[in-house]
Image (cartoon, rainbow, N blue to C red; front, side, top):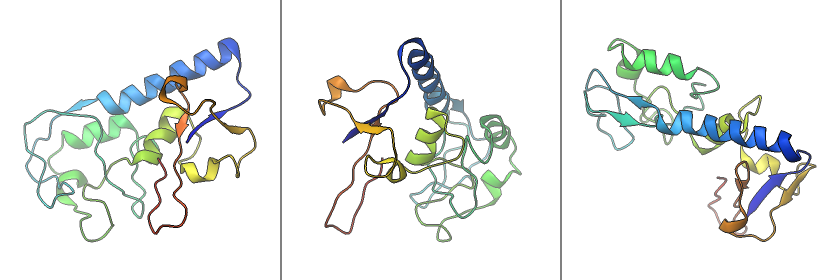
Length: 165
């Protein structure tokens, strides 16, 4: 289900869309290279030292409050990458926080919230059409009708799994 926010029109909407796209590019295209082989990955191993990576780490750091873009800036993350004594190399969240490994990271909701310029990190289920005024379905519901700033919101009823992307 594609959702969009009413209220922005014309040039104001275009500026907001351009800013959202730029913020998304910052997190998805940033290049970084680990300086040690002790940064954990979610597979139970380590991110390869001296190999360039693109995009911020995925790590559900919710209990630590270390989402890149909200709890700490991108520059702080990049500075930590360059310091072999930083928490990225010395702390491991595996087994302590579900779906996490590295001490800093991003998940779909924090990434999207950062890109959209939300003041706080939010999950999409709080902005569904039945929850928030001004949030409406994109019509028609197709990839061709999607625009920058629209959100893919999926809610699976009647199952034990939910996807909020």
